[in-house]
Length: 278
Image (cartoon, rainbow, N blue to C red):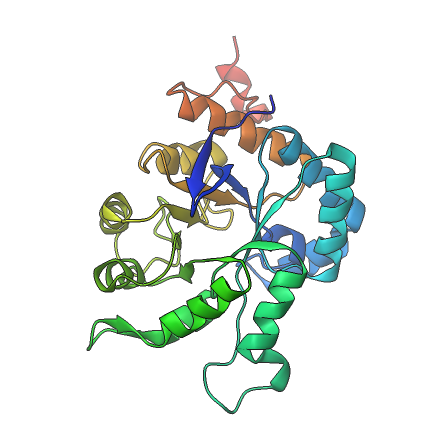
C-alpha cells in the first residue's frame, strides 16, 4: 500500500498520518533511562529503515526538529524510496532580547528554510508563553508568522494549551494548522479529552494531533481507535515508533480504523493467554 489517506494543509497535500520523531531522538516522556536507551539504539540506518516503511506506505510527513542524525536518515530514506518528505518543523527561538544569538528568530527560521521545511510551527515552549488569556490574544504571533511566510514556509502553531486554537481562530491569526495534544488517557492535556475533542471539531484549520498513545501508556489499538474515530477527515495523527515492525503495525491499524473495521493485527501471546486460543 502506498496511498495512505491524505489531506490538504495550507494548499499542500500531505498524509493524514505523520511520523513523530521523539522515539528517534530520545524524548520518551518516561525516564532518563528510556531516553538513554533510545539514543543508544537509534542509528541513521535504523531511523532510515523506519522512515522507508512509512514513505513506501504513502506517509510522507515528518514532524520535529532535524537534528543531524535525523536529517541524514531522512535523506537516506528519500534516496531509497524516491519520495520527498514534507518536513513539519517545530522550532524554539528567542521571544525576549536576552536569549542566545543562535536562537534569534531570523536565524532559526533561516535554518528551517535551509533544511527544506514545508511547515514551520513555533514549538509549544514558545507558543504557550505567548498566549495571553486576559486579553485573549497570542502576543507577536503575526510578526513570527510573517517571518515564516517571507521564507516560503507555511506557518502553524504547536501547543499544549487548547486556548491556542480558540484564540487563534477568534483573532484570525495567520496560521494554517495547529499541533494539539490528544489521547484517550488525557496524558499532558490541560483539560478533559471531551473538551479537546470539541475544540478540534470546531477548529477553523486542520489539526495535527500528537501523542495518541500517551507516550506508550496506551496500547496501539486502543489509542489509535480513539483518535481516528473522533477527529475530522481533514485532521491528522502524529505517532512515533522505534522499529520497522512498529511502523508497519501503526500503518495497518490506522488503515483498518479509517475503514471502520476492527483490527486484525497479531496479538501478543503469553502462557497466561493459552486458554483463550482455539
